[in-house]
Length: 430
Image (cartoon, rainbow, N blue to C red):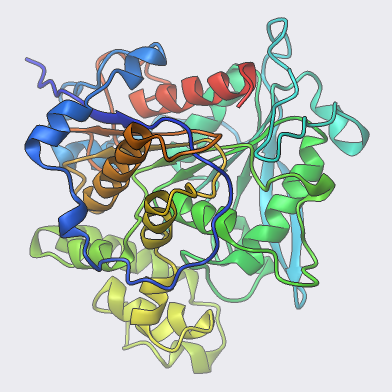
């Protein structure tokens, strides 16, 4: 017998472009921003149906948040040999990131699918030219960014990438600093806000796209990294502005992504998540094993006792934060997003989709719910401008799980939802 779930999802109206930086505590006043039960019922919509998918339901035998979360670990599909072509990105001080580029598996895209995409500045993208033209008739280039402890080889990254390839997209699978194949090329490790690495990567991806739409999908912490990169202001004299004066991305999807790192750290530190946290910490400890001794001495012997401890001893000081509290506050995009929406100046993002499960055992859904309520309020009040975003919160799915009985075996329900969202963006002007 299958255990179903009814989605709670929100679809905003239209949102304007960029908003400046905010220095607001990511958890301040959050409880008062969450929608009530009656408001949740009023905010339900049919986003999944609009994108051509049925509501999410759990797939036997992966019932409950933990089995959904662990499914890819317990029964990972064999993705086959990795055909990705290595792409190196210079990020300064002799460090480089390694990404893998996958070309579309089917070049026979339908007529009209490869149309110039209107950007936030209302400038059409140029037609393919130069080095990126060898991507053939790709609909666009999609970055698929891994989460904490992951890499370009993670099962979810490979599976989503192959689905996108089958539907005519080229895919770029980056490895953040310290992750996977990037480890030999860059010192240190990444963070939820690592713009000095991400911005050169996005600039290079824009050149690889050569006028095609440049889209991105962030899985778990990968979505947080992408959000922070899109919200970053170009510093004076930045070596990596977006080529052609275009936005860094033309579309974005975040799956199970933390918006509030304080709440996320507290959640993963709960006793029920002890095994999850131990697994993550082992992977993080492995990523810093090759680092210089004085950095490793900051850690207790063996893996750190908690994610917060790891961030306090390693992540925060490496990325220039005076404390873990400062890191969590500045690297949490929720406060800035809420401030922009509530001030009537929008998210400051390209068209964006957030997908989250309310039973996510790692990342609380409260932040995504608060964002959904703010977007809906702005839409009803008519205070939003051009652009749009969507939030879908299901009552099941775990953390980056979403394995449904309708899945073909080569893609999860969330993979198919993200694909439908990206196809909508490349087929329609924003």
